[in-house]
Length: 59
Image 1 (spheres, rainbow, N blue to C red):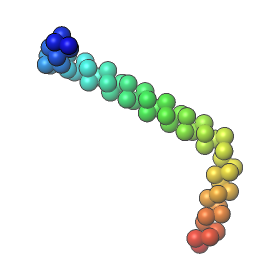
Image 2 (image 1 turned 90 degrees about the horizontal axis):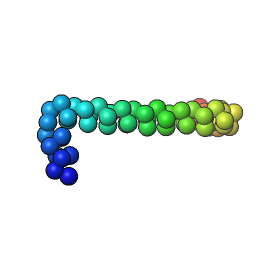
Image 3 (image 1 turned 45 degrees about the vertical axis):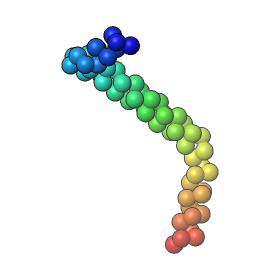
Image 4 (image 1 turned 60 degrees about the vertical axis):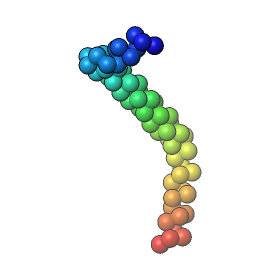
């Protein structure tokens, strides 16, 4: 634990940790967007018909 705190207190170590965490967060976000796109593509006609139905009710 003390070694980890020393790395975090070190400026270059802190930058490296932030870079790794940023990379992990960006990977997770892009993976989630791909999964969302696949889900939307699979059910695209259901989504379009739902949106058209809602727009007919509202307008």
